[in-house]
Structures are given as structure tokens and as C-alpha cells.
Length: 188
Image (tube, rainbow, N blue to C red; front, side):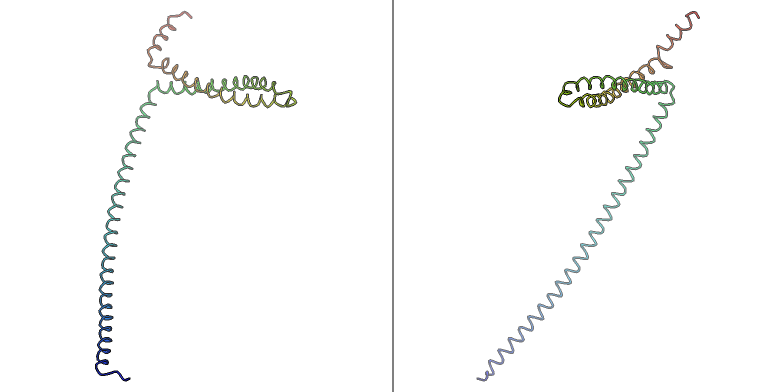
């Protein structure tokens, strides 16, 4: 049961072939790993270059946008200065603010009073079922709604009306020369 010389040669040839196969696989593996390392390095280099280009492009766009914003803000500020240097604009703004304050306050007070009355009147209907608690509750809700509504409407009306009066009757308006001539001609 001893292997023959031919069987031994075939067995050693098979072992040598396996070892050559392992060696070949090992060298192929080293070659593949080398190619992989080179590919990864190239991809990383390309990625970094692309990131740098995109970053510098984004920085340029941000700088351009900031510069454009500064120019526009400067132009806007200059326009505002020119407008408010005009006495007619100053009178218009002052009249608008004064009208808004005057009519806003009086509108809020009137809304509070009439809203409170209306709310109390609406609270009379369910007063039988709520033992009279709906009357002050209705007055409070109606007064609050009336206050807000009256203040908003009064402020808006006063602002628009005051601005219109200040613009059309202020300095430089055509009506102001006529009104000053009439006041100069009147006795007194």
C-alpha cells in the first residue's frame, strides 16, 4: 500500500502547482491592492481639488453678494437722507405720526366704550341661564374687541389722513401759498 513513484511525482506536482497557484494569487492580490491604493489616492486628490474649486467659487459668490448688498444699502441710505432732508417730507411724516396717535387713541377709547355696551347687551340674552355672569363677561369681551378694532381703524385713518394733510398743506404744496395769501389778506 505504498504509493508508487509515479503517484509520488503526481502528488508533488500537485503540491507544487498549488503552491504556484497560491504564490500567483498572492502576487495578483498584491497587484490588485496596489492598484486599489493608487486609485483611492487619485480619487481623493481629485475630490480635494474639486472641493477647493467649489469652495473658492462659493467664497467669490459670497463676497460679490456682500459687496452688492453694501452698495444697495448705501444707495438706499442716501435716498432716505435725501427724502428726509426735504422739509415737506418732514412735515408729512410728523403729521402722519400725530394723526395716528390722536385718532388711534380716540378710536381705541370709542371702541372700548361702544364694544363694552354692545357686549353687555349681548350678555343680557343668556343672563337668565348664567345668573347674570354673562353680562360682565360680554362687556369685557366686547370692550376688548372694540378697543382693538377702534385703535386699529383709528390709527390707520389718522396715519393716512395726517400724512395727506401734511403733504398737501405743508411747505412747498400748491395749496399752502394760496392759504397764506388768504391769511395775509384777511383783517386782523
